[in-house]
Length: 357
Ligand SMILES: *Cc1c(COP(=O)(O)O)cnc(C)c1O
Image 1 (cartoon, rainbow, N blue to C red):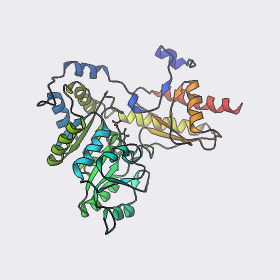
Image 2: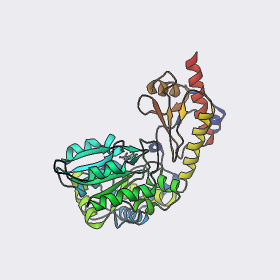
Image 3: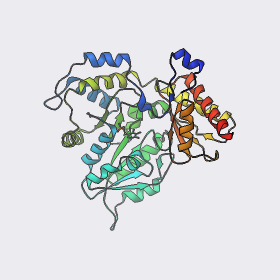
Image 4: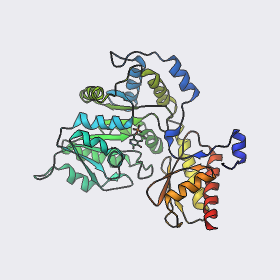
């Protein structure tokens, strides 16, 4: 069983602190109320009013014409690809992008080739990007370029708006559309202290996830220009992503984008606290300096791999995820308070000391 801390006693139960992902966040009471009272319809037959309201609201927030509610950000990204490319073209992505490392299975349905180009801290190398954009004599024609912010595999990093603008200019010059995988775009905007639309401005289409730090139960929204969105809407039906009384979920998503964005800075603050306290322990692991809500802990000098660490931490009451063999990923979110951060730090220390004996 998990050891009880005074913190757990305060919470009235002994449960592990869960830093595996911000996707574990549960809906708020207010979201349940919105879901209960949402006006709903048949979004496959004609429309669902709550879905429509969510789509319009997110499009407006991101400075785009139209929105499309989809079951997942994975589907939003796939639709963005399908709606803006032709078969036998290539999609250019930063080589550690989520769309490349985790969603590439989708490419097996598309007849497209996904080309990864190197980057740093989630920002694509501009020189390599330009080379990839110029479909030469023996190269595939590039149909789409994608960016990602905040960048998941790079540890929640936020490429600068200037970098995004530069990539967009390069693509425009080659007549190539740009999609932004903004699963955590609101985290990026909060970190940059700019409106979300300013981040979204450097792409033609943008996807955002409602079910991560924003705490809605299900769904994502794809936004973009009318012709592309009309195509994406048709493709969504083909994929089986059209849902009937989806307004029940959209209502929670609408509440999330209207009320849960500003508080993301609390998650960022707690990630910084976790990183600082882990590094202050003076033990042979090192935590990344987070730009948003993700902390990566490098454990390569501890003599144990990430699977062993994950298991040991779980035994003392902390859930994290292995991120490759030498790293752990910790994600802060709405259910993690300062006491939980201290608990997590204590678990790291206890686990390190235990292994030494
Ligand atoms: C989580 C994530 C996705 C996929 O979102 P789902 O809603 O789980 O399909 C896509 N891109 C990035 C960067 C993500 O972090």
